[in-house]
Amino acid sequence: MKILYLTYFLRWAGLERQLSYLASELARKGHEVHIAYLSIGHDGGRGDLRQVHCHEIAKTGHYDPLIIWRLVRLIRSIRPDVVQTWHYLMDVFGGLASSLTRTPWVLRDPLPDTDAGGWRKRARIWVAGTAGRIVTNSSEGERYWLAHRPTVPRTIVPNGIPFSEIEDVAPCREAVSTNGGTVLYVGQLLPRKGVSHLIGSLAAVCRENDLSALLCGDGPQRDDLQMLARQCGVADKVRFLGQVSKDRVWSLMKAATVFAFLSEHEGCPNAVLEAMACNCPVLVSDIPAHREILDDSSARFVNPNDTQQVANAMLEIVRDKDAARSRAARARERIQHRSIPAMAQEYLTAYMSLAGSC
Image (cartoon, rainbow, N blue to C red; front, top):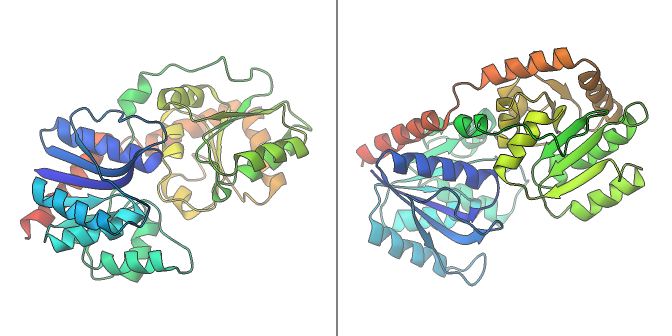
């Protein structure tokens, strides 16, 4: 099968990681896989895409209308059996290009858009009406598109986990505190990710315990979060590591006392899944996305806005390590079936049914 993926960044965050896993796995299985992208991404590399054909699309800006025609030319040149879009902007541009070339296309939604309005949201919903299928990675995404595009077929395909790669990584002890323990966060530094709640709660914890924090990732909130750490008196307890390689992240997850993720809104969070695969005890915000992959026997759920509740949960995990390890083991069991090959097969089934109906 010939498949063309359309994305904005080739390399950047969790969305692109999932694309890389899927594209590489399908190429390994003998399918012809192409990725068209508008920007290389922040880490400046193509990662594990050696068997994948990559095409950079020229642009003069985010909303350059000529992107559509360049995609049309690329689609006509490649003649894929199916196109799949992997970015909000590409859902619009790629969806229009696929419709103009009469190519079956799939919209992949990693995170439901809960914003009240905006022309970009309206344009995306309108173009989605021409998709052959919408793939979401969570039940929340399924409900979103049922409300907005009920006539378009939908499929839930959870994010895949690279178990074999994770198992090859050894725990990293050098950056992890051996005194009061270490809380780890991995993700973009954005307001919705709840990192400010984590820092505020750490200040409360440090009155009773010498807990430190490692923050992996970057984003527009970094300066504000560093200032907050100083204001809370925990600047010496919080280390901002910036962008970290995936192997480094997994090694930290395997050594950390607790993985904390207090996001207010998610689809299928890669970082939480990977922490679960690394047998790291997890502390998460009580939102539907987290309840979909975890339960009370495998994680600690908190209201991220309740600083004392978050602090108490951290202290509980630090003090009762046996109970925390038991929950981590149950969390690992819950995701055993979410391998990359399993995810690829689910996507391939969706593609073949769509291509076969045309």
